[in-house]
Amino acid sequence: MRIAVSSQNYRTVTGHAGKARRFIVFEADGETPPREIERLDLDANMAIHGFDHAAGHPLDSMNALITGSAGEGFVRHLAARGVLVVATNETIPSLAVEAFLDGRVKSPSGSCNHDHGKGGGKAHVHDAQEQSCNCHG
Image (cartoon, rainbow, N blue to C red; front, side, top):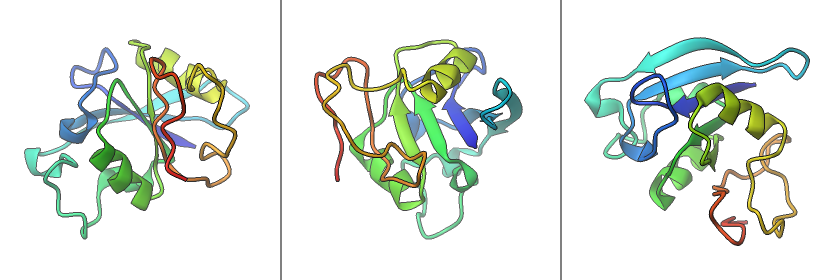
């Protein structure tokens, strides 16, 4: 599984994912701890906000994207590309990935009871500050 984390400074999880151009990419196989495998530093025209969505994008190869915050347009665009978007309050990228893989990054209400992408489910945001699931399907 390939997981991107929005990180404009390559040290912390950052928000405004639609305008983000820097991502840390982790690989997780479920047997060993996730490891950083790549850093993306995209040109300004490659930020999802304003991107030509008919073209291919480096985030297309991700299974999930973890961010501090994301708008609905970003979530929809990545969902169409098969990428699950998850919002977190965790600031350390590697810990955010571990929390996601452990199922600890989710709505605190627990009201969401459908697939979160591990089996190919729909992409949607779960924000640790929400009181309910912000799912669209």
